Length: 203
Ligand SMILES: Nc1ncnc2c1ncn2[C@@H]1O[C@H](COP(=O)(O)OP(=O)(O)O)[C@@H](O)[C@H]1O
Ligand SMILES: [Mg+2]
Image 1 (cartoon, helix red, strand yellow):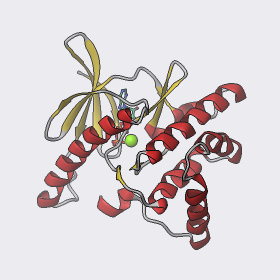
Image 2 (cartoon, protein in one colour):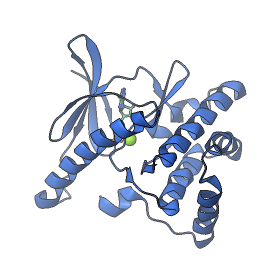
Image 3 (tube, rainbow, N blue to C red):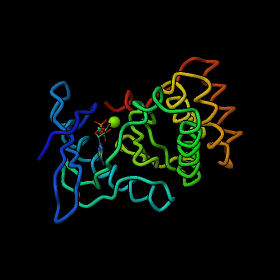
Image 4 (tube, rainbow, N blue to C red):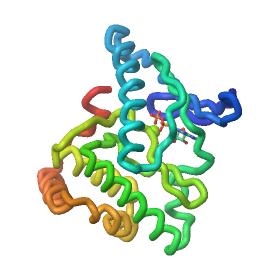
């Protein structure tokens, strides 16, 4: 196993399963959480992530295939790509337009299926051969709530960091039927300057 990355809650290793390259995502123990909370939380996020990855695929959103589910670890299809975060500054305008539009259309399909990502940032979108993949659904869930959907949009807006990129993203997200409702909720959140991010609520 080759070490790949350490995220906010997991360690990622590259491994092989039969003849496939996989990314093994292992949710590691958090010492600051008492064990009675840490164990069930890691277990439920692992299961929840596997289940949402399946649902996202059903909604035609590109994301890793789930090959194995353990208590605290998942074996996922390996995406041979880079984080969107590392591409935003490097790519040409034309490449950015295509990628960010695709990111927006992907979020539109997720929200159409009432799936909320919960941590929708440029670090949780990967790009491989120009194709966009959504990863890291551990904080996601099912919701019809416009506020939760608006928080997905807001986190992407903040992590993109510039208005031109955000507009390109919105050009894809606009395909979502609930777009006007989510955008007015977003304006509301920005006006009051306060919102709940799933990672703060449960971590
Ligand atoms: N399926 C995958 N294929 C390749 N790399 C991945 C895959 N999943 C995650 N990674 C890499 O590992 C990093 C952390 O994974 P992530 O699921 O976001 O964990 P965390 O929940 O800790 O943030 C990602 O930013 C990405 O670089
Ligand atoms: Mg992540």
